[in-house]
Amino acid sequence: MILLDYIVNLSIFSLLVSVPLILRSFISHKPLKDLHLLGGIYAGIISVILVGLSFNEQGYSYDIRYAILILVFSYLGPGAGGITAIMALATRLAVSENWLPAVIGLLLILISFTVIHRYTQHHKAVKKTAILYGGYCIIYIITVPIIFNVFRDSPIFHLQYLLFVGLGVIVGSLLIESYERLIRIITEKKRMEKTLEESEAKYRLIAENTSDLIAVMDRDRSLSYLSPSHEFVLGYEVPELQKMEVDIVIHPDEAENFQAGMQRIFENNERMAMEFRLKHREGHWIEFESRCMPVEGDNGVIEHVVMISRDISERKKAEEFLLQSEKLSIVGELAAGVAHEIRNPLTTIKGFVQLYKSGNSQINELLLSELGRIENITTEMLSLGKPQAIQMDSADLTDIIVNTVELLSPQANMNGIQFKLNFADGNFLISCEKNQIKQVFLNILKNAMEAMDNGGDIEISLKSNNDGECIVSFQDQGCGIPDEFLPRLGEPFYTLKEKGTGLGLMICHKIIKQHHGSITYKSKIGEGTLIEITLPLLKTIK
Image (tube, rainbow, N blue to C red; front, side, top):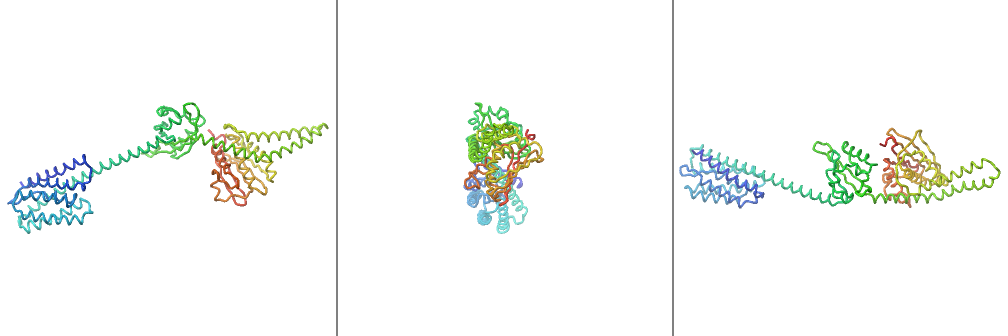
């Protein structure tokens, strides 16, 4: 019968502990320590109910109200424990005799629990609960069967009572910890959802208000996201663009390179920068520079590519203006040498015209030769100074080098400089804009000549490698460049000349990059500088 009473007490105790925890998981997620006053009152009500369900044994009242007192001290502290204890004691004195053991026992428990709480406040609640329960068992054994001589001859009765109090503590602790964990999960989930919403709002704010074009391309080459800036820059509505094929919007000359670049990103997981033209709704083309970044999926495979593109039309115009300015600068410097070179054949023509009446046929050949030389020089001058539309055509790199050397020969002769050409056998056909490549060679040779104050030789070599590329090298005998300056060559406005602008090499780098090539530098102080330009041969360009 006693066992049944304990089981009923334990069941009702579990129910009463669970109810506020369940309600709290839906209503309030405040920590238990912030609810100590309400918790103490509610725990006191549970104690009152448990005392009402207690059973009497020879004038003594027994229940498991101390289980709730132990839990209150563990989770809510001495303040809430005191409230619970007072309510439980008042109810106990009202329903049972033998006040002295109840009062003294409760006072000893309150004092002991307060001391234990002070020294275990940094412990976790579960560990603190175990210590408090151990303290309660010691106090009960000392006071009830020993001091007050209550059922001293029935140790099984006391062991049974302590066991059920312990079960109450265990059940209550498990319930509280389970719901505390539930609260933490709910709170963390809400925090993560809020953080995610804030983060998404920030990124959406940036994406929808930036002038850059932000696009996400999926593995099937479809566009899953386009920023609203596409509407402003290209004139198309975003849903309209998403339905279009990429080949419709991108310039036909660059579509193949764009698709090949996307393929490399998806297959090799590499970042890439690209330049291409996109078609505006009104029909004109806009230049863009795009940074493409791969995004891996859960299986480690590249699932998306994020493209951030920027309109560089104005920058292109500025670069073209710089290119023309540099050309005019070179033309001005070459004018004196070219005038001197033209004057020489004119003198020959003038002298032989006076002898023309003699009828010597050799005079006609010399006249035609000198006139052809004047025509070549003036033609090269015109092609250099006149702005040309950029159009890629096949050209023989050997002819470009020879024409460039011919143009610079007058100035080189005046400074005691000779050009030595060393060309490998074979054709060196490349796809290029001839005037731009000539501009690069002119800039490099002009720099080499300016570095050779005492004259000397400039060796120009042309050969091919095993990768389907040709290498043009320029070796001068100038003053050389310190090693620490080499990495910065090609930066805008960085120059080693007293009156230089630093734009010449910058333009060279830009032109060679547009032709899918590269420039490298090697130099030693006092021995000269070697510049190597690598360009793809025509047969490697698809």
